[in-house]
Image (cartoon, rainbow, N blue to C red; front, side):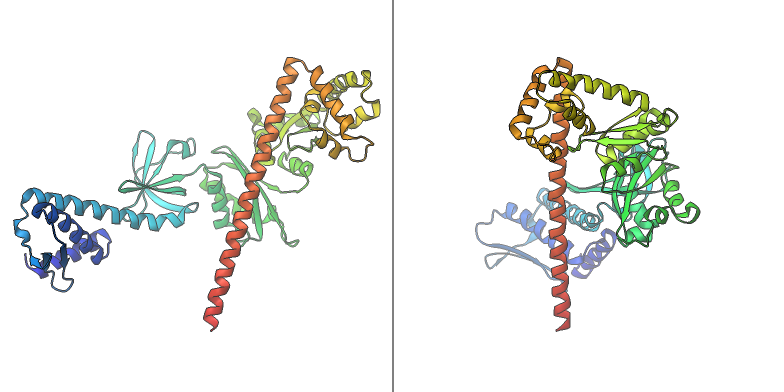
Length: 437
């Protein structure tokens, strides 16, 4: 084969593979160099180059020419294997560089096959992605040749391939759909504060805005539901509750439980739990089918929500009052302090025993109590616990520690995002300055 014919075949291969011609020639040089070194047992400095203009291959050991015709079939196969491996790695890198920046965004693909519940999706070119069973909306059918929209969940290098994982169940999929269908969300005028889903059934999404002229809920719904309908259609009719976010926990909890009408809400100051009281006729609506409404609300607000009727709320308060009465009888507090505890959700021995004296003093800042007095109450409450109440106390402490851990993680993430935004702004300012000069 002449040098010109060799280069023509390289051009064809480059077009078929979508690779740069020089990249392919570099791989050929590397493969031939490794094979030739093994064949000739080179002891000196061995070099091999391919002329990019003529296609001529030149090999030298020190300054002595080496004839590659003497490689032999076995060593030639070694060169072929090295070349093919290098080619696959280059193709993998191209696919990775294309899709890695698209992580956590929506992409379109075509269903090509299904393997034991795993849907294989062609993403264009040589890229393929997988839509695992757990990332599929329950009840959806993915027919071969159908176009599917999904969130690019992860992009990873796996050996000589790129693993692209898609998701239609992740909360960010709904978030990205909102960005595509609602300009105010895409522009940052409306902020999505939280999303929780039970895929295929129901989603709750909390939104807010700093612009007093914008109604965040109305903007997301659109005229006669035109905007939200496009999102629900993409999700196969999944119900979406758009909730106005509120900084006040009680207001946020009330918003999250709508359309149920709430009579009153009490919550503790440790982000542990909240008690919601509704009328008897509103109880099924607040709880939802199979507990779905209150379950999603609890995940969205991060409070353990107890929904109860007025009658049950009165019974619960009476039970808590009865438990705290034991501390009154012991002379550790008076009736006024007991009622104060009940009003501040410290309404059982287990809840009281789970708190630190410093935390209780912070809540009751207007009470003439000192840490030592409160500490005696906490110690006494722990001594009076039954085995069942002790288990409740341990569960309360566990939930509070988990909430504190999440808050720290969110704080660290917020700091990292702010730092990244500051760096990007500084870089942009530098570029603008350079452009100005």
